[in-house]
Amino acid sequence: MSSKHRVAKKLRQHAEYYSEFDQINGEHPWMDAVSEGFVSYRVRELGTGKVAYFNFILAKEMGLISADHPHEMTPELEQKLIQTFSIQIINEYDELNARRIDPSTIKPHRYMATRYLQLQHSNRQGKTSGDGRGIWNGVFSNNGKTWDVSSRGTGVTCLSPGSVSAQKPLRTGNTDFGYGCGLAEIDELLGASILAEAMHLQGLQTERVLCVVDLGKGYGIGVRAALNLIRPAHLFLYLKQERLDLLKSATDYFIDRQRINKKWTIQNGPHKYDQFLEHISRSFAEFVARLEVDYIFAWLDWDGDNVLADAGIIDYGSVRQFGLRHDKYRYDDVERFSTNLNEQKQKGRLIVQVFAQLVDYLKTGSKKPLKEFQKHPEVEKFNANFESYRVDRLLYNVGFTKNQRKTLKQNPEALEQFDRIYSYFEKAKVSGKIEKVADGVNLPALFNMRVLLKDFPTFLAVNPLPFAKRSITEQAFFKHILSGYAKRRDAKLGEKTKRKIREFQNAYMHLVDLACDGKGHDRTLREMSERSQRINSDKRITGNALIELVDEILQQKKKGLPLQQIQNIIDRLVFDYRELPEVSSSKHYAEIPSKPLVKMDLLAKLLNLVETNSESI
Image (cartoon, rainbow, N blue to C red):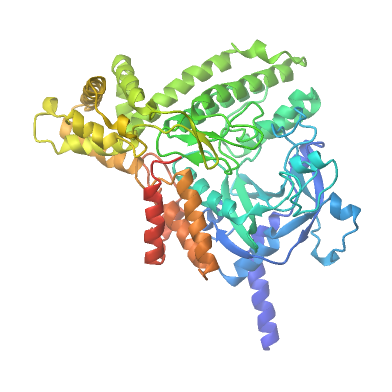
């Protein structure tokens, strides 16, 4: 066989090896189900870029690559990823100006930018809004599951706020109008890669980043994947527009996808939409409770834009993981401030209320005012479910097992007492007024309750005194939990705080006593210590830490840091979230080194950034 034939054979083998990516070709069932739910665009291959990050674990879970594929980028895989994802839309500006484009680079199928509600738009019915800088690459089906795949940074669409403000088509890369560039900055994409996978490994419902293509000059394309990327906003715009036929089509599409993926059990028949609403109410109650207890800021509002319809995180641009309960923080989005951590419950309930209005409209054909659904049974259930999930999550963070939490819930008086005193410390703020921070405003928390939950069971476990007499002095307790934000006048231990410290320790010890279940206090405390140290790890990546991490990575990249090192760094930071109690993660995580090789001096610097920002927003 000649060398030419050998090369040809090798290329055919590689093409077959990564042929699963060919499913992702722009075609998407939403286009058939909701005929007016998108704007379609021709798409061209850019033929350029380098893969800065690839989620090998996610790709194996999806079935895009084989389970035994090495955890390293190969030239053939990178070529396939560039071919599949390094693309840009041929938008209205390109068409009007008859831009010369090589026909051989144009993909055979049109890709969609979906329509949905957005508060950034003056039109509150979704007539002008939706995917402003992204398109849906399509779906991938394998092993009984169907995944959505979409990209951002692929060009400005007519649904972007910038295009609507300009009242004319915009050229991709134009920066004259806000939210009208159509491109995505590489730091944002790498940050999302880290945080999305960290959230996934904490057991949160979320989009995940499949791939990041570095296009150079600070820009890139980020590819996200999830079993269902539909947002409430995709459905709400047809409710607002009172277009019953399209609302029904969109809702049925969403329900069918949830059933296909065996996420929800919903039977056809007269109660289908009621079952749908039950799932919505329960899912959002659990989701918002997790956000509150775990100090995760995810901008929720009535439009249902910044959240997945099955209650999960999407769009990591404004998502933050706080180190403390910074519930006064608000993100500054130029024209308006975001909601804060305390308001997420209210906004979650409001989203469920809109869904209740939506379901009634589907069932009756008559749209009633939203206020009529304030006392809807499923809206009322939201509050009860939220409280149940919130308390359960708090007890989980303390270190109690599922069975212990079940036991403790049978003692509501003890739980209420602990919850009340815990909230006193958790919600306390430093003295002074709300101040500006880099991307918003905040008044910091006074106490670090995560460090208390992490260390307190260990303090008690090593105490040689009989269990009933174990405690920490008020001064040591106060000093240990005082945050780095405390001012001089905040650091004085008064009589009221001493009393509250004693009250906390008594309430905590009472819960431990109730949870022992015959095991003995020492064994229970040791188990709690082991769990709580993993749950409340000091390796938690806050929003500010993430910004500084990515900035350092990009600075090192400019100095010649290889892309494989960026991959290893992201993996290293993410893998610290593995094996949290009661969170099941992919078997593929166990097949690769827990500590991917990263330059030791760089790793030390990055971990120091995590540590120094451990209490920040």
